[in-house]
Structures are given as C-alpha cells and as structure tokens.
Image (cartoon, rainbow, N blue to C red; front, side, top):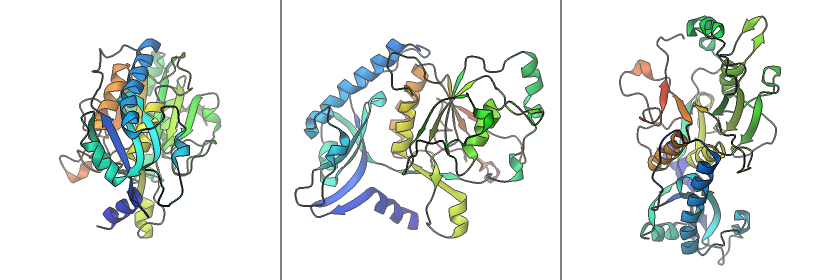
Length: 339
C-alpha cells in the first residue's frame, strides 16, 4: 500500500488547473518488424524516419511544434499552465513520454490514432547479491579456458549494458565506446554507486587482472547506460539497502539510445548484444506492449537481448518476471545457490 502511494505521488503532481501525470503514449500506426538480422544503417534510418512520421500525428493532436525543444514546454504553476509540460520521443517504437494534464491523457485514449496511453511505472530491482561473497565466480566453471583456446575473445564485438553504471577502472580503459546516465540526477562522468554494472562489465571485458583472466570477452567494447539507482530514504534502512529502482520511461530512453549511441545516423555503432539486469516485479506490467515492441526492434536489427532470470528461483516455479519471461530474449540464470 505504501509503495502504491509513493507511486501516485511520483507520477501525479497537483497544479492549480488540475492533475499532471507522466504518461507513455503509443500510436496505432506501427511498422511491422521485418526479417531479424537486417542490421544496416539504412534499416535503422528507416525505423527512425517512420517512427518520427508516426509521431507527427500525435504532435498535431497536441498542437506541438515537431521541432520545439521539450524543455520550453515547462511553465509556471498558474492558471495558464500548458496542458503538456514535457515531451520526449521514442521513435523506435512510435511512442512518446509526456508530462501532461490527466484530462488530456483521457482525451488521447479516445483518439483513433492512439493505440494506448498508460502511466509511467517504476521498475524495482532486488539488490540481493551486491557486496556478498556469492558474487565470486570461478570462471573455469564457465568454460573460459576452452573459449580462450579457440581465440573467441570478443574481437570486433560491441556489448551493451543497461544497469547501475560503470566506475572508472584501468580494466575498462579504451574499452568504453559510449556511456550515458539516464537516472534522476544524471552525470557526464562514469559512476556506479552500487557496483553491479561494473561487476557485470568486469565479467564481460575484464583482462588479465592480478594474474588471472577475469573476463569472458576481453577484446570486446562496451556501450553502457546507467538507469538503475538506489531508492532514496523510502522505508526502513534494510528496505532501502535491498531495493533499487528506475522507471519504464528511463529504460525505454536507454533502449532507444543503444540504437545510435554516438548520435550520428550515418554510423553503425549499436551493440551486437545487450545485457540487462533489470526487470519488472510482475509478469505483465502495464507498459508491456511498449517493451514488447522495443525488444522486437532490437531483434529486427540483429541485436541479441540477454536478461537475468532474477534471484527468486528458490521460491519455486513462475518466479521469472518480465522481460526475462519473454520469448524474445535469452534468459540467463544460475543452476545452484552459491554460483
């Protein structure tokens, strides 16, 4: 009950002329995914152009200038406050994030051009293993020596990570192609207060550190998005230490950024595979349709989505939540408790 109350406070803000909320809007016109593996600059630009064209219909309904800086939509809390306070395009799934009046959201739901309007929702992640000895893994168990003998070390491979960020370490020098922070207070400097993303990155691209090979693919490169952060002083100390959060909109923004991390449509620089350690606490979140389409876009471009199965397996069957339970992804889990 308390989490639901916090969620309402986060999503809706009371203004003098009504309620504002943060919503995800998906347009009905959607390009059907083409054959998986069509990874080319032309394919990505087609997706971008088609998505932006679809969103022009939404912008026309909202009477927004398609080239307007979303930050200029913010105004004072007065009788004249605009119906839309913020607008962000997710062209890869023909969708957008809006901070707008609740009555406008209800109007959009009636529009023939709009597929659905849902509230932005939090994504909670269990912080079970951070800092515990169970994180220690014998790479021989993963068959690393056999992989090294075959010289399969990630040459020419770009790996995306959507996680808690990345801290500066010599093992990551010259291995990070792009980094972006999507948290509430983003920083241009690489950071990882929790260590999980850095641990994942070490397992992926770590070199010969302290006399031992620590990474599976040390010759691959990284594209890192920081989306997960600790909950701020909500509940007791033990709850705060064990829970992480992000929002559906921030993850979608990171998923789109992964398609063009350098911001240059003429270069083909998106990852070949993307590792994800985040999930919704339920099997079917309200924004599931948005993420289904996002994953389909990745696969259409030949990107392999990899998700963690989670840490709830000891509780029995049906403990893998979304998106790890999706047929569109490769789901990875441990086979024993102290892996």
